[in-house]
Image 1 (tube, rainbow, N blue to C red):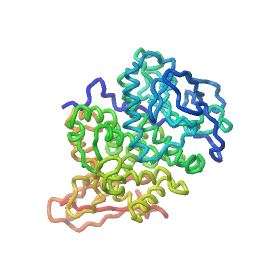
Image 2: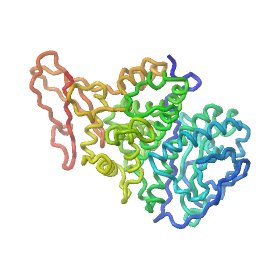
Image 3: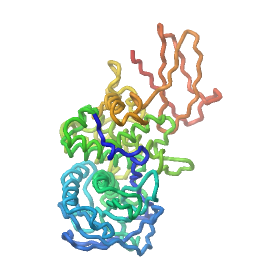
Image 4: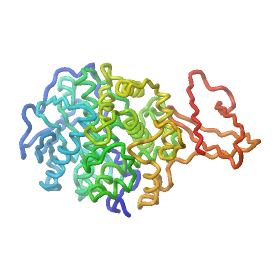
Length: 497
């Protein structure tokens, strides 16, 4: 069974779409300040011509003094979204394309993402969020690049024009447009542009809502924005829940590939659009050795690894943490999706609470508030990292929190290996994560040297062919010394037979 046609299956690195949330630099401000709007008042009408300020430069950094503009025509006006087409792209999408896309944004993406992450502030008083499909996004990617920018949200558009003259002072994000002839960069087919718009809107909508919950509705400042790794993990989860909502799936159903992709043609389409790349990123994190991933998004000298292969692993880690947290600590029952009312947990994570907590501290707080469990990040991390090897493969009596409830990881990846995706990494293994095997005997004395970055784990299988011998495990520096002061290392041992 082919789960993705060749025309829709992109080469792995390009498949990441560099959607990278491409969150161009954050404006620096003591607070949101007074608001002005480019598009005040009621929503525009079909056919209206609108002008937007354009602050984002070719290097993805903003210039608040930019005088560049984008002119576009309103092509869809719904209850929640307005779609505007850059005049440079006129004629590539049909009116039916805009209607179909707009209805999905309005009816599928908006209700579930808002239920999980909070409502927009409506700074421009038009009761809508604007999706601007523009050639300026296409132009951001050099021809022949192995990745490309699919769209972005810029927090500066929530600033006033006093703070940033190039701000649009409203809820807005920018999307790649159809360009079959390759006028502005490499060609983008109409079908691909439609699919990219759906999943990119879900992703960037989270960034917009998370930002507004903190600096607008929560009256914070730009220093209160969520840490990148968790913000991206929540954004990738927004893609997933949008895909579930599109075909009526819920959480905690222990889904595998067959359950999702074979349910119907619509389910196969939803898998390709909303789920496949999320699973790819998560698999990349598992496949490329979790111990070496910069899981919390901190690179050399504190730099944020927001591009390239490292980004895939960091995003895979963040998405996995978000999904596992929802499975384990979201309320039971039915919410906006069947299966659980986990949105209560994600509402807490989105706002960060009254003091706009961030990162691991935000997770600890949200779990305490929603689930009533006081767990440190180290305790949560140990359970999460264990789940990556024992989900649906656990011995009797193991802590139930080491299991995923929404996805059957073993079944999912085995079926992906057997599918037409399985000829290439990371889907060419029965399971992407392969622990190091250490064979034990009566006189075994074996050392294994490895590096573990912050909030990651290294995995080993201790195997013996006879009665289990006594074993002593020591974690030392590479030269056999004690670990440095303040270092926290936790060893989890699970007996599988």
